[in-house]
Image 1 (cartoon, rainbow over the protein chains, first blue to last red):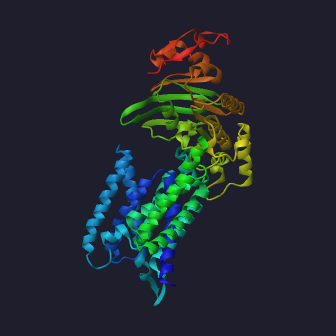
Image 2: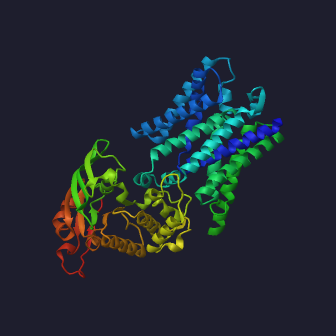
Image 3: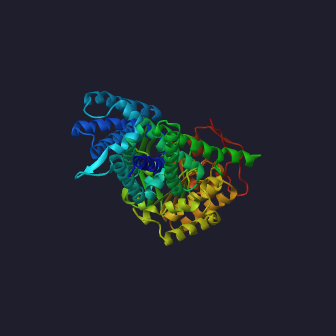
Length: 287
Length: 260
């Protein structure tokens, strides 16, 4: 496998995993919680390092899931006790992220983990960090992590498909007919945390938000079906990764940056030209 | 046998009481209208009965058993404004949501469930819109989709929150027909309602509420001028005769409620 191909595969996996998971956040009007979790998982990663003394995949995923849940829980608790929900998100994520930044300093030079890397990621380094079993290289760790998280997320969505759908559309009715609404909420928070941490190495904390939210928002403009929105969001994520990689190579710029920019460009295209919800066709219909 | 028994229900937001010590028992096979001014806690009452919002004290029994054990018997039509109608789904899908409990967790809707959901849409005159996106339905049509979903649930006690608000005449007729059918089948219907003029036509029982229970009972006995003044705190204007003092059905007076 060549170096380039691994980067493209990693990018596509980031796009697909974040796209599918993020579309649920968009529908639940919880895009800002993605922003929060994408930052606070840093604390989970640092925490996992303190416990295991390595930046190994599985402990990192567990750490991120725990901190992701904590983030959602703190936001919910503050909101319930009377803090505005956007303020609650702002307070919780900056505090937990700051704690992560402070703790990173204690790790020192032992491993490659710094704030710069955490924020921006570097997909170009991904192919060198490979999974070795018995001296055989099985491909980049990031690909395995992303693939595993994608599998878990798709499995959870498949199992709880109608529960997720109902609790998103009409949570009170869902509660009434016995759907575990709170459980579904935190399940989704875990899925977002896992997607974020798996994408961390490649695109970093800031740009992963773009991969989570923008493909979902774009798909929302293009379809009126729940299922279509999920897969379309994933497809737009993949497309953004491909366009992003191509243009990064062509213009010799950051790969993660141009992947995220591509999601923005695709969104603008959908915003203008979507057959049903696009600005242009709406104009045409009204005139 | 009472379909619904509520005792000492108290609810408060931020320590301000919204409902105080509300107790009543609704007989089986009745249609009850919950009437009261804005902010009287009408929606709060049914939502706290349904455990959608927490109550401080209070006990709810359905057919003599605690609510938690009888949840399967409860149907609910929320206010139309409570959900996001831009959600990407169609009318049939929304009706199928009423069957989720029957379908069970992990499973998908079988053919029989879909056929049943279509029948429910037909009963409210919406079969032709089954595949229509919910955002493209009119307000009345959206309300009928909610009715079909409640119908699909096949419950025994139905709660409806302002089902008549902002709907067209066809939908109004559909709601009334549905309530009558449910009553005939021995089911119980409880409706939050704000239009005083139609109370006597729609409901055989009335519950007058203004943070506390003013009165509950059969419509002719409870829906009186005196009780309405108590409920609305004198903010009610009777422009002609009140319906309740007028025996003849054709001579309906105009009854208006001055909102603050």
